[in-house]
Length: 241
Image 1 (cartoon, rainbow, N blue to C red):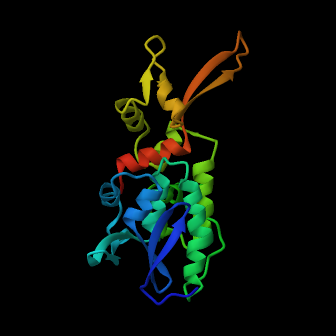
Image 2: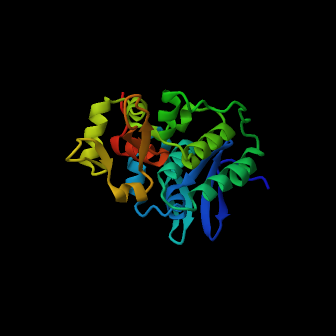
């Protein structure tokens, strides 16, 4: 069904309405509706963390007449999806990419790119983590990248994580210690994960066996940062040059 340009279109995500304004094929989502769907309690606080070009306003009809409401573009939408802890976040993302955006773009929007972004590239990965989806052209590559990021079961060590976050390795260890993700074991001086942060899926303690030619094998222990933990660290630290 086609709608005139700049019309507010009410879509239904499960039991919640999500109002969207179509600006020539580029959707702007009513921020309060998106935050309600993602279980983000304070949408004003969430919007404050977005870039200026990711937020704006739309005019919605209310019982008191037309009023201005905070809105986010597609880049801002992906940033909020990535930050949401709600289990429905992935369903919401798939609903947007499979149903909402194709419906809007059938009215004359732009086409989709086909090349998937390279998540082995630190700059690209950081762009995803920071919600800067505007640096990635096309809808489906962004959707695939988010799936790969949020569903990944693997984790990276602190050295690799520090490269993605553009900070020193030792600085990242200190930061993770300061926010009570890790602590130093008193006897060995090795970094260990707090158990509650492991249960939350932010970090992992990986144990490895190191072969020794002149005696029993040694056991090593390494702190690993999960994709969820990496995204959380990037959100907490904010943009870095």
